[in-house]
Length: 359
Image 1 (cartoon, rainbow, N blue to C red):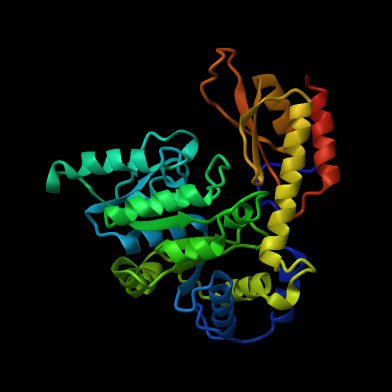
Image 2: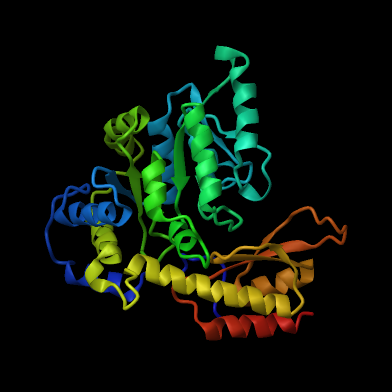
């Protein structure tokens, strides 16, 4: 059975594999100073509508978060983020290892809200130098639990951050899923126009590895971050000698010559397909009698299951299990299903049919 464990179990989409093979024997300078990285950066600037944006490529999402947060803050400052944000739960203290303290709110489902950020800001600034100073907002789109931010939610966070002179950073490990979710009204152009920095994830969207870190130079924190990033990247061991591989992959992903009939380049096209399969899966699971843990239109879907159902689903299709408080008191757990660029409608129908046997 097709595995729904994550969206990075497979290799890369055919267009990217073809590009890597075609350029495999070429010799280029190292550390991202090659023509492919330069062209890929230009294509991304064009796609986001920001011709002056700084674009660099790093191998993974955790190091991208380390670099962005370190570059946008001072040693005595930290990011405000939701309690369920990726750095608080799944990065093994990576941000703290850079000397930055995470300032977590109590927002449910990993969705950062201005009111909660304001409470953290007030607490942290009440005692002056005795408390870590907030310097930025961190949130991911989609969130850890698959929430897709609306334009009004995003603008509210940006407006609040501007009122407190804080930077805004969007972790885009699954940005492609968020931007292509059905009914989504927040565009990458709008994010690029307002955020100080964000990432475009490749690892979870059909590439072998790699994230594009984009920094807007319009504000003082962004300009300082751009100056600091090369040094921080080298110090973190993330300045990849064969960085051109990321350039080749992102170039293929954003190449307008590879766009489909609807105008989607590779980067958005496969994400839209993964989302479509995820929505189909969600509908099938609901029809089979499973209750959603959270409603989302992205490529992650979450459902309440009994521990025994969760065990069988994990064995059959790799659905990961999360232990959460069950408000019914029945001791249920949450099973997560993730679709990817390889997922087909037939794969979805098969896992739904299996789930039906567990009711």
